[in-house]
Length: 282
Image 1 (tube, one colour):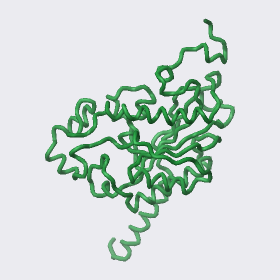
Image 2 (cartoon, rainbow, N blue to C red):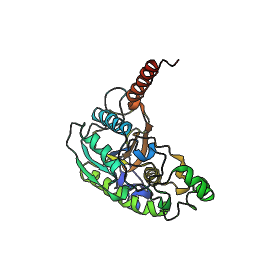
Image 3 (cartoon, rainbow, N blue to C red):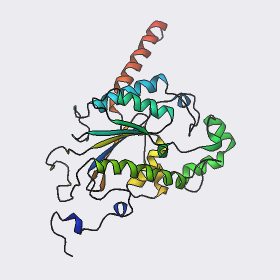
Image 4 (cartoon, rainbow, N blue to C red):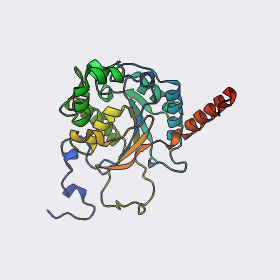
């Protein structure tokens, strides 16, 4: 059959649509937010799936990212649609839950808020709770293998990346399916080049609050990339990443934004300056 302009139904579906991960012709946006600094990070310990609260810095980071997402179209605008914020989905772990709560406290809408165990951080087995120096001393070869080839080596008693992907895929499928239920199917018969758009999109969007490792796997899954590319993504604390779905096609709009955290850095620098002044140090 010859495809006609705008006749997306006659075009072959992408692999991710064909296997059921992304609903056909989905127009939607995912905003990924890593949690703020936790107490175990302050202590230099591996977290994995251990519970740990946000530190004072982490709570400030969570408030700042919440404020940014409450006003996403303030300059410099985030590539977030004008449509409704459908839900805030988060890892059940405390550091992610606290970050999600800080975001919900600041947004004007009243989205559904729900935990999803598929978004738990990668289980780190025997490494969880140990200081990084102890892990380096006791498992130097395993740690080196994890950093060089994470699909072949991982923490003793922990999760493999394949295990993580097996629970991340259905979590993503649920999130995307709910967005499809709340939106109108899109089309690829429109400009795909920045600067030529007809205006901000009006489709629904969802905020997902999670962790460094699980977001790396989620992005690889969304973009149909092999798990061997795990280390290609940087995911800073309280950073924002935006993935738009255009008629089922994932598009990375922005990645690892941290500009909203600058007020905290300014406050920390001011506190350090005041401490130096009180001490008389030069």
